Length: 71
Image 1: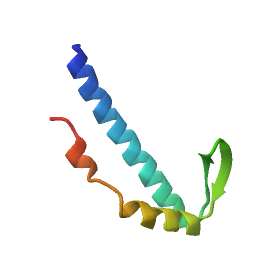
Image 2: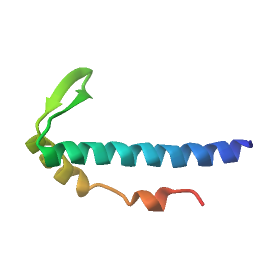
Image 3: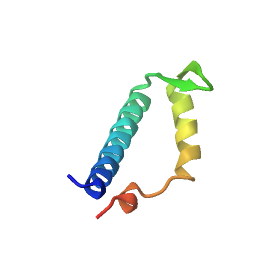
């Protein structure tokens, strides 16, 4: 496998992982379950309400993941 093919594969895997994490976080939010994250080198527990607040903040800054996929 060439270096270029490896980079392309890594990009595809990264997008897939990010999508899976986003789906898991959304499921927790919908079910009213908290999530645990690392923030400033500390473990932080976010409630479902806090997930919603962060999600709305991020949605204004997000990019279309599909556009970043290599061809």
